Length: 553
Image: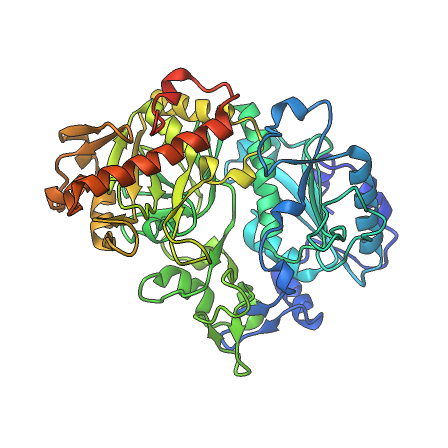
């Protein structure tokens, strides 16, 4: 066991499991992969990547089964009004944690990995993952970072986090009746994903989706870091040849992964970063990408990272819940198992990366939205108050026809473009963004990768080539010296010109045949913003100058 990290952890768990015959600590990568294969936890595909499947109820996160222990020492920090911050009593957590350890002791092997979250050693969080599954241990090796030699610099060096995960065991529903979630059929859920921020412990019982491990630790970082002046962000990040970094924030379907994979810019990471007094640092050591419909022509970096050929013991990319034929070949266009097939792989599998995964303060931030109402400009500039508002709202839209009964686009709001993983009171994150924008002169743009000329089904989706041109103009500074007009409905600053872009399409009203239809649709969306803001932040301590920037206000 790594003695340098031993003081970081509560030894009680180690004391409990040390009598087990097969406690395997920090196995090297090849040995971990061999255990995965020998245990039949995954199979080697034709190209050498590992293919695995979970039960239908474990193909995604379990937000309704995800809890935060409510303790007097921390409860004031957490926004309990958010539907994603579900409290659980201390005694119930203790019961579940005890059950998890009992499940663990019955496993043939117990795997322990010591890693850190965070590329900047000053705030790298030591995390010890304890599990009975070699595949989970390998996932932590893919996604979490090796312990750096200068870990003693970390503010968390003596305050690490332990995660116990038993993904295929289930809780006794009768034992936990009235203590955990009631299912639609009246039974009690037998799954729990829990974080105890005060005791620095996490537990996962019954959720085999590997993303539960990643997102639990992401949420933990999002809780701890702001107290040290670090703003956690659900974003991708890249850097140009001159060292200028950019952040891209956006919900699923907005183009975050596609736009951040720029051959002219080096990738820091694709999902989770912290912004400190020193700049930007990736949390992770790997990527966790969606695989459904992946196209080697459109996303060659991701495809090659997963599908390159290698001996299985040297590969280690994990592909969850994708269709695999007896030949060992994948069909990534088949969604019968789930639309959420995923892959995890180390960043080192990509060619165009910055190995350190750290950069200076971002010169530009892009908020990405896919507006299916067709009323947002394809690019607009945000001042500090506008940026704080759009950060709070995290807007994109669901499409008409994707679900039964949906006949028009549906506005979707996820604060900070990652609401389920941001547990603190919302004004904390929003104020930090505004302060850092001002301190480091960071420019923020809203980029609409959705529709223009009409709602989805009537208008057209903005061509990716045009979006890339606008993104490049924002990143290069070309949009700093153009004239802007003010959008009264959405409180946005729309450029009159943009290099390589026809002037007409920059203002969305120009692309609608019937201007009255545009105004009605824009007003309808603005009213949805206003209602969503009031519901989420009506009783929150949000500055009046930020409130005024909400559409519909």
